[in-house]
Image (cartoon, rainbow, N blue to C red):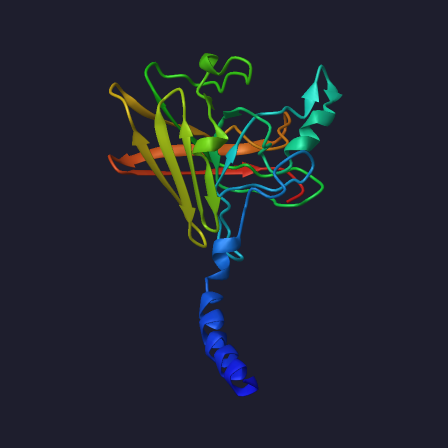
Amino acid sequence: MTLSKFLALACLLPASALAQTKNKVAYVNPLIGTERMGHTYPGATVPFGAVQLSPDTDTIPYEVNGKYNPKVYEYCAGYQYADKTIVGFSHTHFSGTGHSDLGDVLLMPTTGALQLNPGTADAPETGFRSAFSHSTEKAEAGYYRVHLDEPDVDAELSATTRVGLHRYTFRKGGPALLVLDLVHGIYNHSQKNVWTFVRIENDTLLTGYRQTTGWA
């Protein structure tokens, strides 16, 4: 009887070992830390990558009426889980820092009349920002997806070491537009941007740059 029990246990062990071979990356949840003062972002990056492509949920100025705005500290990573709108997707972010910076080169898909200002969280229709729901949001290692309500666009993001990859699926007819914002940034102040430049090379290529001041 003792031998029979031992053999049964020995047969179960290989099956248990196989069940535990699931890729550890599948357990990564980039949304952890995106609420309150966690200062993390949910977007796409690779280990030691130069690009951290992620949504920014608001544009908080460094100063209000000439005085430091403490609310800007909440957006060290550009994203707050409690927010209900997305301003766009920028290519550089910090995660877990106690200070704000970056948020460079923001893209945002839109439809209809062209808007060149982001608008406000209370009235997203006054600009190019969009409302969204966490029910359509998916974040995993190296990949981010969300549905933008107002333009009715599915946004998907991924990244390589030095490149941010965007895919936008427009669900309704009408003009499909893409806003490129070189002024947007995290921890924005009046002296943040030194130089910004963009040039249309041909029908499929834009070149440009953005130089800023900051601690990073």
